[in-house]
Length: 319
Image (tube, rainbow, N blue to C red):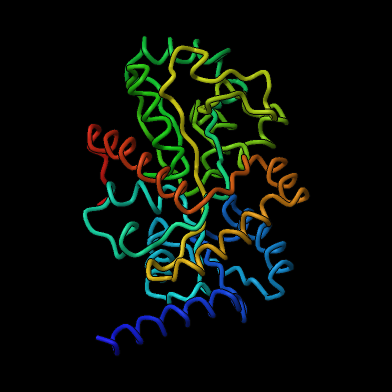
């Protein structure tokens, strides 16, 4: 018995010492998308300041594929020491388990939340020449012509896709989904008039909105966006449940010691709260967050209940 207690105490002491010296070498930050997108921007923006704070290199490693599953599985298999972290969105942690019958990782068993970095609220946009003057007009016309309006998305199972499916349910619409491989090609076809509408995040759509190539009709956010003060929320239009955003946070292998998770949390949240970082995030169209592991865990639980019900009710699968 005494030997067991001694072993336990030595393990606790080792974990504590590890946390106190963490990080003692470079951190690998995996991003499950190609370079240049919103998740990549967010990781690189925070990583730059984080590297300065901890006096160690933070190396961003882009690993796209499998609807983020490849990067998630690689992170889950990595040593649980805090030196491999993953940018994970709600596709990785919430949608995928409901969309696929089998996954190469389990969000709840294999990955541990560190912090939610930021939100990319979804915005309903239409082509400048689509003829839709407002969100009410769009909804009225879609309701009057069931199946007569197609909409684009950044990909099947993406927040952009599911945000429009949520609107369809709440507003009792029938529209046809046309998935693309990314927001950029989808937006290009909305601008060109091939498709009339889509949900998009401000990071991807800001230039098109500012340039007058697409018109923002409503935001799927509890409050109006400071970058689009004249665009109403869906709640203002009578659809209070239409709230959707790409939620991008940081996770680590589930066996990572809590002391290391908490150290990572403090450092990443401090980087997010650095004024120049927050300014860059807001200018890019991201709502900065930076919460605790417990708060992030609770958010993911609530989001899982909400979105899994929608996915099940609509029988959406990607297998």
